[in-house]
Image (tube, rainbow, N blue to C red):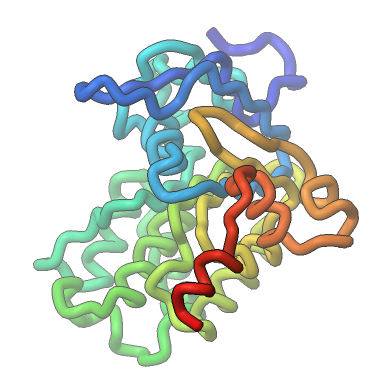
Length: 261
């Protein structure tokens, strides 16, 4: 049921657990509250459960236990208005290789019910911003490079002006120049009413966009808080702080190097 007031979190996750058929528990009793305006950088090792959590949030996977509220509405309620406020870049591609870039974007806009004239203005403006060549979106998506597909996916995630944006590895496959365009776009898109979850292994890019950091480790959130708390007000880098959480056991490099000297 919807919350009766406007004090709800943008995303509230309560006691979420997920196991796979093989019996492996990926997430166990995970709790998280994200306020409106937060940009949450989701970090962790490969296989820690970052994509699993995102896939549950965007209805690709079913949770086993727990409850999720998005904008005060229970996650499992069918609410088309809620779905229209989500912008999603999933881990797997959702691009039809037989369509041109423009056709793919037109189809996305049709799904969201965008007015065609508004849709065209946004597509043209985003195409000019993200792509180098004016005719790139006239090409079939099957011929796109990895970076071009990623940029098209980012366009699809934002085209309908969502309030909650969930991006899984938005920087992977992008050259540094394109990644900087995405970073600048994310930072410009931020408002006090818009909330982000961004999963990425690129800590330097996360450092440029995140207001908050979460680290999934040992099936749960080993850290969740403001970026300043994670870096001790900038005294240590994101990479060093993350290393301390994920590599609590001491690794003896000296003994290893004796075998190579």
